[in-house]
Length: 474
Ligand SMILES: Nc1nc2c(ncn2[C@@H]2O[C@H](COP(=O)(O)OP(=O)(O)O)[C@@H](O)[C@H]2O)c(=O)[nH]1
Ligand SMILES: [Mg+2]
Image (cartoon, rainbow, N blue to C red; front, side, top):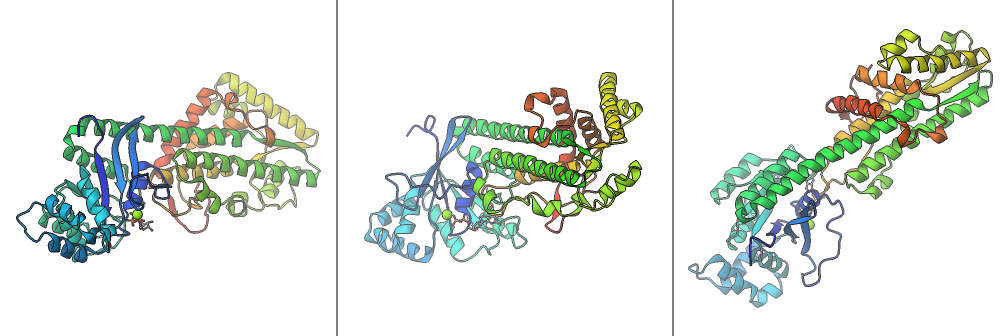
């Protein structure tokens, strides 16, 4: 075999349920790996895949069935070739040619054949288990293949994990190149460390691993930027939607509020789904575990009862008096003064436009009409939920089976820049909820400003727990 031209073969081995398939799902960014049909020519339980980066196959990886019975396997190998003077691979070959390999120990035999045919073994270990007994015997058996072994300590985010104990036990076996890697709670730095180990042990393929590392870093940047762009578009649209209603028409006002809510829910869901798909998590997972839309959030703080009453009282016209319908909708009646508008950083031209629109609103108000727009803190909470989703996706391994939800319990202070941008969105003519701003209608500099503000918000926007929604701290 020409090691320089063909990609290396890497076998994922270890005890049943140690997380072998999960590791592959996460490394391959493929949440459905493990359910694909096995390749022709391989046994049913060994599944092959290609680890690819920028169109190049970096390595051929094979998932294997778990080793369940190391004691019987050791006994069978000893029975076939008891002479310890033979090399490990010779003893394994002799065992594989024996009847035991095709009968009772067929699953173990598959793993040993795979180990012999591979350039490196990634041995996945459940770090919550004590490093003793069968688990250590399995490692000794795998060492018979005389291949480099990288022990992967999985479940490291678990409170029960005992990585130090494992490292000491592995050192006894002369296995020093272990890595900690939780396949469910993704950690980019942990993945980099794993690839660096492989690179060191598969020296002939060092350049390919370098390209893989660079490609993974680029992907992360692109994914983040694409997500921030989606959220920026969502918030620009949410800030701009509005409906003009007759002040005296209570039913019309209620209908308008319902339409605004539905439009906002649809925008939020569309953005979230797009992000989940970009990150290559399972879309059907989302359908099975729907985003908490539209019921939960809307019935809570986002649309606090009394908002309209309060605003109605402030406007002095009592337009919303008694309309305790519990929605986060502002009445854009008082509008902005020219001073406030220019303070938004909108520039003199934009400020004049803003003044004109707010002048329009005053005029409508005098004629008994008001403009309903989504309340500013509601837009902000929608943004925060999306930013928290992005944060969660960036730390989600493709092995995770937990539902993907828009976070409910969030606590962070929103940057001032977010409020300014929402106000700027409101300076636009109100958009009918059915005709939200098209992509081309959101100016590039506006999008860039949103993305910058959201990027600054991202590090603080983490779900605090899975409790009840608390809205957003002002
Ligand atoms: N919390 C957590 N669960 C994991 C991790 N790795 C695997 N699992 C879970 O452990 C179980 C066994 O994983 P699987 O990949 O099927 O193990 P395999 O038999 O070695 O292929 C599954 O329920 C996984 O969701 C991990 O790093 N953290
Ligand atoms: Mg498996």
